[in-house]
Image 1 (cartoon, rainbow, N blue to C red):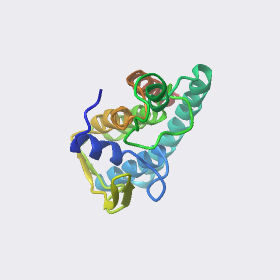
Image 2: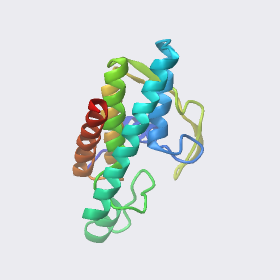
Image 3: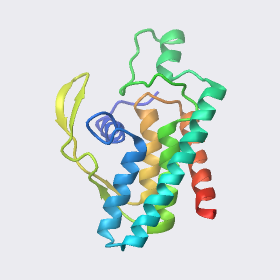
Image 4: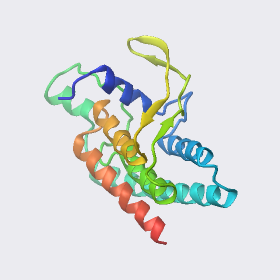
Length: 192
């Protein structure tokens, strides 16, 4: 039972990378990389290495994630809750038409954060990826999204994963195992 608080709503919508925004969770992490690389005034070689390793980790993470989704084929919260607990329950965020386990957004949160921390340090940053983007919700809109401050890249990765639980899109187990999987894949990419 996750409370629907203004803080949880802001978290969920910040990491909801739908149409009109980044379109994908990996796109959001590429945007974060760009912002930090620019803030740190990194050279072309460092930028190329960061984008390359982040892209490889995203690709391998998603391959692993989607393989697991269709191997285990577990119900998402909306289906489970509506069928067994509370008919008519609706999650905060749109529920994708794919199995729950493992959470793709959590997996890329683990992978993206691991790659960026390794290459850029676990630095504080303000994520301006969606700043000024219009957002339409069941309660109205458009609402303009603002930047979001993070004490560290690791915190952003943890929050990206948690946002799927708060948004009602994934169960905690799918989030936890997705985050662990993403970190593991990124460590393999860094070790190659």
